[in-house]
Length: 373
Image (cartoon, rainbow, N blue to C red; front, side):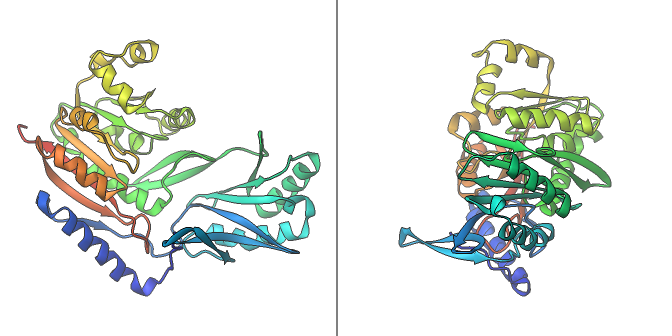
């Protein structure tokens, strides 16, 4: 893995290269003009993790650069600052290192540090050790919390010590509204909050015609995580049914619905595959009964799958909806899925969200409408 080198003066150039790549990759589908959403060129990641490297009396943050010709060869890269990470993380990196250098209890067998921050400056720091943590560690960690104005979690084998709380509260500004999100340690959240705001605004815009038609229908969302899109899109639909397999994410999503006053959405703990079976009547049970699937009139499906994309069966399920909003973190699997989906749907909107500047990563958004609609 190459560590991104942030060169703000080259940002327009790297963004143009991504645009050209997507336009070439998807040319066969004849999509509309690509909408491009820029990121700040640096200080854009609200969460990062670093190995802690010990050398005699010193310790420092490290990442590894892998030799592509021999993956077993890894070069340790020392990082005193990291221009990819948020300004808050960069502020904390030297302060935390200094504290660990001055305390044998905090530094001993410290293996990894994970930062989770917000646009407003909240910070949750997880310190991961190769040893049990006791009262002395907790005493010094609490003092460090107070000194740095952060929250700390200590982890080691079969141990998780939460000193204050295990989450931060992110506030995203979307179309003139402030949306509140509980983001829990060690759970998936969108790392680039600046781009996340633009993604949510775009998704709201492409589904806004649900409001204009006067007779709103329902949205089903697969892989909903902590309710990131659910909360932003709820007012565009009569009802929302969102599904997610992670217990932690489902719990967080329910907290976020309440925090934002969303009363027309329900979160079901179920995989996308199980949900497809439930829709076909092939799966029953308490969780299926609680969803009340017969009461919904779905017009739109939003899917935000992992890098592997969707299998053929899932694509077939999506093809039954009038409108598909597909958020993709992997253009290759998106192209494979569109080969199937465009048999029944046409591409109405196509977007690039530059989630990770100065990397090859491309986050895409596609709106598809069924051809017989």
